[in-house]
Length: 43
Length: 535
Image (cartoon, rainbow over all chains, first blue to last red; front, side, top):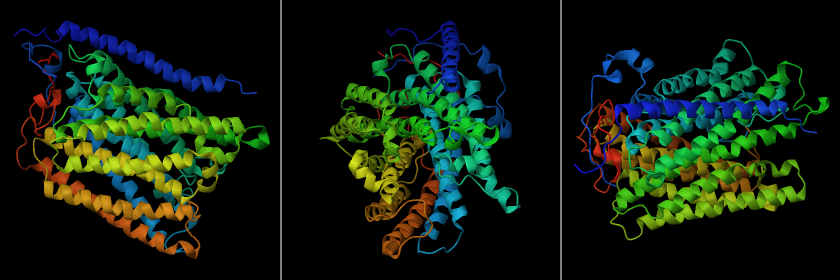
């Protein structure tokens, strides 16, 4: 079998951790968009 | 694209240790992407019939002029809840069901990256749908004055003055929005982080690309809708005047906020479908997908343009001429990347060895009928013409060509295409073809007359109408009932397929291409225990 190997369990765990971090960032962006509407002043 | 299973999988760790639960607990606690996908799709089908029943009552009322079956207040409630149910509780969950089932299979991931959030995202839906429809039942017992009666757009000041159905809808929209954002986050991180080794972004299946753009659009726009309905809530109960002109507020502000979400929502509903259609066309034309990169760039262009064109939904509310011109031209500009997609779809079929199984029939029906939605959309984008057509049945016909022919028929394309893979059984082709032809004919019987009604000046959202509109309304109602009842064939065909039938092969369709077809039909409980590698 000459193809490169798939993810090891360690690699999979690392990718899951990356996913959790990115998920928090995306969630924070969504919350920020929601909140900015209340702070934004429209003359 | 080829694959080679390359690792023996160590089964002594985490996810194999948990005992497999059956019965209700399986569905309540499952974190398996296939189980959750099945729940999303089942929920969508149930809500599709509930929303459909509501609009059949509306069409029955409109069969003849005069008030026949219901009071105008109840008529308004049915129309508004029908739209909210179909958009938020039928089409969006169906697309999320596809994403759950297919994205891990198509990109070679073992599951979604955040399985518990995935479970939560689904289980928020049933209470939200209950909140939407509960006011109907409460009204039967003398509590409240029924469901939200403002139409799905919830325009102020009507929604500021409305009954408690508006509060139920506001709460429901918040919950549905949280569910959508959780689903979107999960899809983005799964696509970014769990693709099989060797699957670069430019080897990503188009279905995953369509969903990726959809997920970003949801994260950008759902909070704006949530903000708008929160402001509506505070206007109703906490003494603010965001949308109350008497208090220095601006009702048009609500329209801006709503449609900043509402227009991208159309593409949120359609991008997953545009992603899956090329796979079906390629499979049944026995050709590679034409113009992969062009389609990806078109998805991105449409996603970007969709958030800068919102005000074309209320040209007639009044705005400066430069703003009218900007929103008109930017809206028309969207037709360019969309035309690229149409070209690629047709070019994929061009000189292919086509066969016409049910998924292919639905895909082709989608192209023709959704094309009519695009053409009539161009008419509505024209400021001068829109002044005539706004709030008429022309608009109703246009968006049903977009969201039934483009959305629901697209979902049916996907279900027929992937159902044998999911269940391990073939569905009845005969029933599938009956379903297709009855759907296409009755759909046109229902909605084509509505173009003529709109052109003749019949306004939308009215339970009674002038005598000049009688014939087309009668035809439309007959068509709607045939359309509604022909969907029972679909439900029966799916049920029969789940229960048994001719065994499906792993590849299912001769011309199919992609990772998901390397797995067994149905796929094992844990997808890709041995991860594929893309050469």
